[in-house]
Image (tube, rainbow, N blue to C red; front, side, top):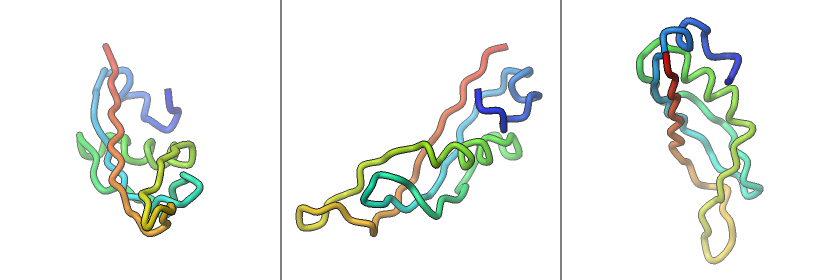
Length: 83
């Protein structure tokens, strides 16, 4: 459980999705991330995903056979809670 997710969301069993837009670095880390969208709006899922984004690793696309620092990606993060 990510502690930055409001406890009310967990208690009520609300599920949702956050979409981040980030730049992928050659070392598979993300930078310049921001929240593109979260559903339901105002749920806190976007902030929670943004806080967790330093832990994410994504393979960058290759240009001429070499990893590129030029790619932007949209990262969907789904949160599922049960009541």
